Length: 547
Image 1 (cartoon, one colour):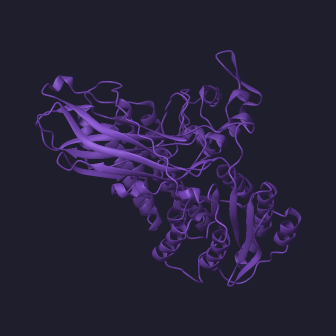
Image 2 (cartoon, rainbow, N blue to C red):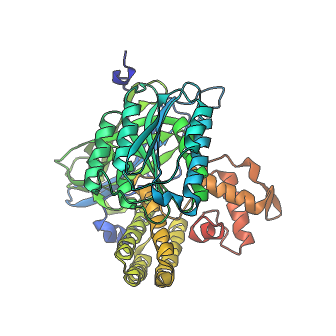
Image 3 (cartoon, rainbow, N blue to C red):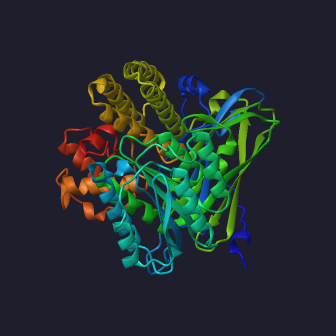
């Protein structure tokens, strides 16, 4: 029996709770051009019975009765259940194809040697009930090993035999890897192609739109695709499109030495996968809701949230939805509902949760409330949008225009953004980037490419609802938090100090920005003469070598 087709549904009615009141009229009016933002946030709740849970809140739980064109933001939080211990839960089974670029450019700077090392480490960490295929491509595509249980010695020998040659047929490599994964799809497990390339596609499918459709067709057949781009010369839009449409991860690897860490990140996220085929579906009451949009960095229809890919244990994401309302005189407004649907990676069963979107009306303007947390999220996304526009200008080879635009937009944002610690950190980051663009022309062509690729890589996470650029706060989770924790351990050693009290960095929960991590950040900030607020903003990340 194919458990993928079985359905287990649950309906959970979620209510909204106002957090803080405030006027904030100027910012709310100014931000009317925004639609939706995807952000990381702090969220605490009791243990979940589901492997993925949803929470819903509004920036304005009370709106004026009988008034048209009122703007409201809904914040949707998604949180995957925390990873169980090895005694409680087995790793998710993997059915993967490693697709490695062996084109001539992989000979430069020892790229292929690092790729071999990382691929061998990946193979060594597979379990005996996993399946792995090995594909190499240049102008031609070579199936080195069909999908089967991992034979470490044999696969290591095949990987060691790779030599750089000829051109780059990315689509051919994906196609061969996809066929191997598709031959024996797991009903309960992860079916994925993992692509590594350092170059521009010059064989097979070379058009960005066509490669997106190509990746989407593989996803429809049950195979997801992770894309890893190495160095300064690959087309980041091309590979990011593959990963986005293939529901996999996208990684930018600046130097060959980073390859092992990225492969490690990929396999750990795969093995701890909690939910896959995650989607949000919206049933909007169009009699009340004039417009509703999803916006992370670019304005998108709500249908963009119907393809959220996979969540690993403990992962949190959040999305802001902007709606324009025509409120009648009813005491309660029914805006519609949101349904979360996903496949539980352990059971293979399809799970659903439903949240009703309701607001209260009032004739008294004094009764209106503004959730300052959501207001802060909107401001952070506006800052992300500024960064995206500056990046677009810089990628059009106009670094000075990028610097000028960012400086002007920063000045405007400073006038209207709410006074919140996270926003203040973000404004610091915009000022820092404006300075960086100002002097970018003085860098070598390769250094400029690497800088812009790093900025582009950060926007991919924002589009998936994983956080603000250059900002980590308590409650965030994931591999960037792990890198932060590793850097803090390197700087603070076994313990740092904070007001004379020890900071045991060993108490930090890996991948979770918890209270111990915040305290370690404060200790490091004090040692650097930075504002010790426990928020890992751009200046803190730069001082740690993470930016």
